[in-house]
View 1 (tube, one colour):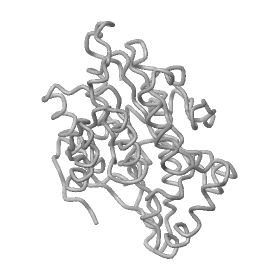
View 2 (view 1 turned 180 degrees about the vertical axis):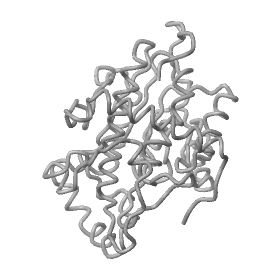
View 3 (view 1 turned 90 degrees about the vertical axis):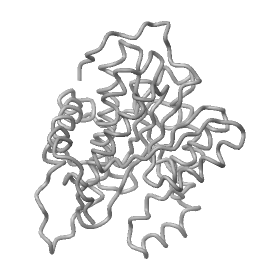
View 4 (view 1 turned 45 degrees about the horizontal axis):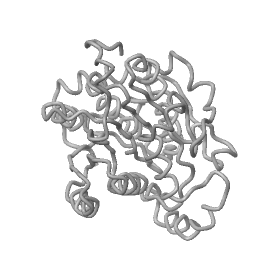
Length: 323
C-alpha cells in the first residue's frame, strides 16, 4: 500500500480542530470512548449503522458545545464503506484520528456479509481497510489510526480460555467454504483470528505511513464483561455473562468499559502516547503480541488482499444484506 500522493508538508500537522472518527460508536466501548473524548472537547464523527441512535447520542454529547457529527457506516457492506470515506473527502474532512472500534462476534453458525464475505473478517478487518485506504493518503502528520486487538488472538490462559487465532490466508478467511449444515461452526475462532488481523493491520499502517508522520497502534481493551459484545450469544449465555460481570471485572486482565475507554481515548489523542505508536498496547503500556502478528507477509496479506477482493465486489455494486 505504497503512498501515491505527494507528502503533506510537515507544518500542516493534524490539529485539535480536526475530528476523531469512531466506528461502532453507539454501544459498548465505542460509546464510552465517544463520551470520554466529548468531555475533553474533541470534535467527533460517529460512524454508525444506527443513525437514529447515533443522533440521539450526539445530542447528549454536544450539550457542552462539542461538535458531534453522525454518519452512516455499515462495515459489512463495502458500498457503504466506500460512500462514507468518499463523502468525508468531498466535504474536505480529514480526521486527526480514526478509532477502528466496530466489530462483530458470532457465537454459532457462519454468516456472510452483504458482499458474501465471512461476516467477522469482513466487518472487523476488511471494512476498516477499505475505510482507511483513501483517508490515509490525506491525513496530516500527527494523525493516528487505532485498531482494536485482543488477547484472544493468543488463546489459552491469557485469553481466559478463548481459542486462539488460526491463520491460513486472508483470501481463505474472507471466503471459507460453506460449513456442513449439521456442524457447529466456531465463531470464537473467527473472532480471535480477526483480532490477529487487526493487530497486524496496525503494524502495516504504521510501517508504511510513519515517514509521513501518520502513526498507528493496536489497543487491547481487555476482557470487558459490561460491554455489549455478548449480545450475539444465546440468551442463557448472555444472562450468565451479565450476572457475573461485576466479578469478572475484578480478574487481572479484565476492565470496566469506562476504564478501557479512557485508555483508548488517551492512546488516540494524547501527545504522551506518541511513544506507543507502532505497538500493541494494553492499558497505557506496550505489550508483545504473538510472533505471527509481526510477520511482514501476514501484515501485507491482510491489507493487500482486502483491497484486491474488495475491488470486484465494489464494481458489482451493493447487494441485499443476507440474514
